[in-house]
Image (tube, rainbow, N blue to C red):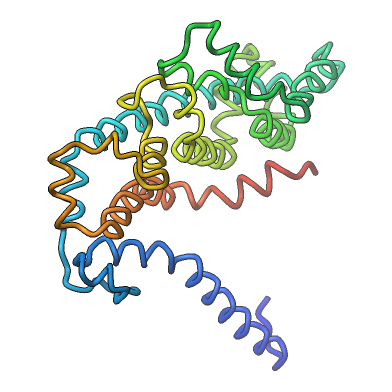
Length: 293
């Protein structure tokens, strides 16, 4: 229904202006980082750059993309996102299905529900977490980055609530046609749950891509760092041990601000490119998956 009253129109105008202002405040830091990264070192150092590059140049991007350490760290992050997201979704989908059943259909359901919920409330701490991974001989491997967080209970709760909102008649009809639980899951539940699954895929991808602490702790060599761990060492901590002599000479002609801006924007670019394709599922997946009718 369209609002025709004067007060309603005034509210819509102020609401639109507020959302535009909010969007600008969210986009300003990213646009500023991009503008700085494309500006000359003199303009960036003197603080002349705001939303548009000054003395446009690609020098910082050429320097970053020619660094083998950056490219290798980017490859590690891409591998982690692909393998980690696939494993997360496989376990989340298969875990949410039995937990979405009623207690009379799945004996012991309450025990398993509490078993997983307790993992959200109680943690063992960093030292036991590290020792378990060490005893499993996973240090320095991709498994150390993706296996400890393979089961995300919060995502499973969202998905099982989405499952419980699906019509029970579809499952009953599939049983009548001779389908088993495994076939019903992949042929009925998963196709109908794509909004929720797409949302959880986005959550999982962003979580793996932005994670940096576990890379610093679990990777025993800097050349195995994922991209965010690598950036934490060179952008935040400024670890000069990762900078070669050739890099030091090249840095004499590149501003520290433009170099940081280029690395930060390149690190954010993959998620920026993926989000528009999943955005149309995002709101529906979160709302329907988090509310049980």
